Length: 348
Image (cartoon, rainbow, N blue to C red; front, top):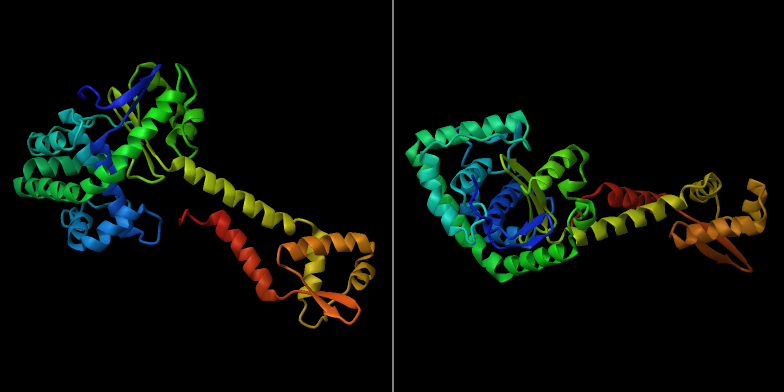
């Protein structure tokens, strides 16, 4: 069973804990993620390590390739579930530093501890972790290679943890604990991208909290990342300290997208825009558009004002008259921006 929990704050029935070992685990996940999806957003420290330690990161990326244990249903398995199992078995997941975890790693894996029930993971993941743990128990050279790789990787990650990760995680832990109270709804305490907001996990998390088995872990190195792992007697919800900022940016993007979509939500306004874009059509005046669409001039002026403010219509003075025009490239750019905002990832 896990050892006594390390640094953290207790708030009513909720335990909030800073966990360097789990920071390392998530850091390894992010390093692998950047190998597999280099265009996806990751914290800047991950990009730094990739630039400065390509050989070391390459060893992490390819460690399980030769045994054929790096994929699940044809997709890369990015997490290091075997290390989490070892940390759980050795009781070091919540140690005050990473050293006890790394020191216990070789003997724990050598004992082939077996994989406990992992209710947070699908059967395919449990099977993959089980096969990894069994192989490490049999193969001393592979086991030694993994332990050395973890040591080297943490030596590279540790300066980032000491520089800002630890202080950010501790500050977040104090903030969550200060806002928590017995029975407080976790969905009001944690950002919207965390697992506590997913219906599939609600019952399990609530039951774990009732049994005092739930631990919330602020992650100082994860940016806006988050994770969820469940073991017998222990459920962990990890929340990146930038999750709230990320949610604020997501809300801002949603508002911008809604504003763009609203411009194109009125069929009459879209009809006017289509008329202004027609290649064979000269720029139109308010009077001409009012006549064509059977509208009053003030109504057309309102539609044109909205199109103009959105950058979709431009006024062109022709003597004493003002004509309005648009073009296909402008409209395509406007719609593409709305799609990018609504479908794009956080690329900050």
